[in-house]
Image 1 (cartoon, helix red, strand yellow):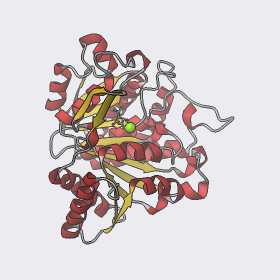
Image 2 (cartoon, helix red, strand yellow):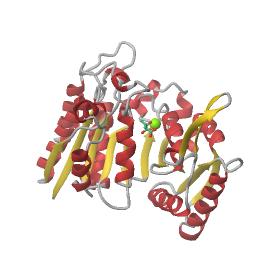
Image 3 (cartoon, protein in one colour):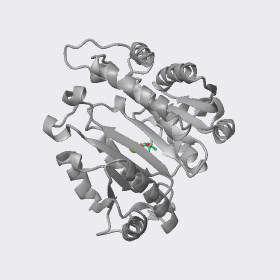
Length: 358
Ligand code: IPM
Ligand code: MG
């Protein structure tokens, strides 16, 4: 097959890990006889430096015309000034909105060999396998915001807004995913307080009742979910929730497997290219040292092959290769136990490439 792929390396460790993703893509081309046309574009802080805009027109257009996008990470202390005209994160929110990437899939799975890297007890995190489906283009992130004078100084606010259609489409994605897994779907809201959550709950219930009667469906309040996630995470399979709750819960969930360096994420729309990225940030403290863990990016590459390019076999191969590399004991610094030697970003990716040879 032929596909056009846009790389957005971004800031910090972004370029180092994306170049490892690119090596994997090259190998997939060879293995499967595919042809990937790959172009790299600026986004985030580096794009602010070069173009004065975190998502320049040329980058956005290239993304719109592509089949899939692989993103490294954006942001860093250099662009953190609260008085700056724009921020790297603005580019991230804009690309999600412009490409209508409303469903953010964040799988969280613990690896048996890395259980000890988790800050939680082994018997709690063993066997955890959750797929978070976070709504990504609505809610409080994109609702009306205001800031104005107040007798005490100033007053500011953001509205959390969802409509029926926005809730329906993301619940459909989550429910379909649950059907391919262990058929359990949990919807998370704050319906005891928020009107927007009461709408979320009734729409979500209706979608599931009318279309997915085979699913074991329940609803959990977001504060309780924060608790259950660290006390009994194995009880959850697919979890669907709004933008802000999903942002918070997925960061909490990312601690279950121990390292952020292993977790990929996919942002999908109804049609058009998907955006794939590791969930960790730009890690400016280790940028340029060649020690970042490339596995999350490599797993994001697998998600890209599966969800945007329909190359399921190749995606499986990559995931198996990553698994075997971990089983063989290869560790970057973030997942090395005390006293274990750690290898570089490039060496880790080389091990995956070797495992891909079969
Ligand atoms: C994420 C990040 C972003 C978000 C930030 C960087 C804007 O935290 O992808 O979870 O809040 O969505
Ligand atoms: Mg976040």
